[in-house]
Image (cartoon, rainbow, N blue to C red; front, side):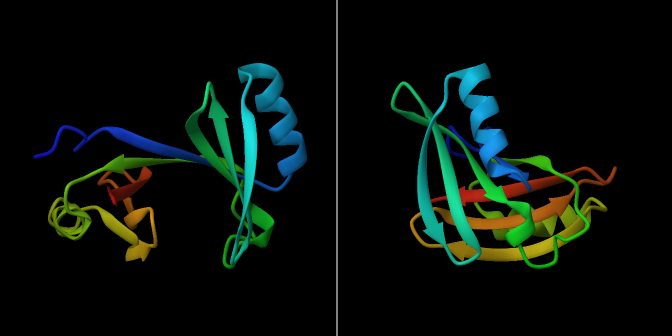
Length: 125
């Protein structure tokens, strides 16, 4: 296993009020923001001291998320996301989104642990 296997790797805020969230986390945490265009709208990357800390997306622009409440999503690093999905199934978890590739980022899956808590699994590039 690599050193980052099993560590919290990334967090994303999914919100319907990006402007208010940016203002809040800037005031509370001192975060700075960069915006990158994506297929489902802009992706906002928070940084502190030149280090990327978290991302943020407009929940209202995401297909299939109409009824979802605003929330933070945590991604855990794993050496092999496909193997981790197989283990999730074997341990009684649920696969919410099968693994997919994000260019320049890595391979990601969204799963639920056996108790129902949702988490992202990610093999970073």
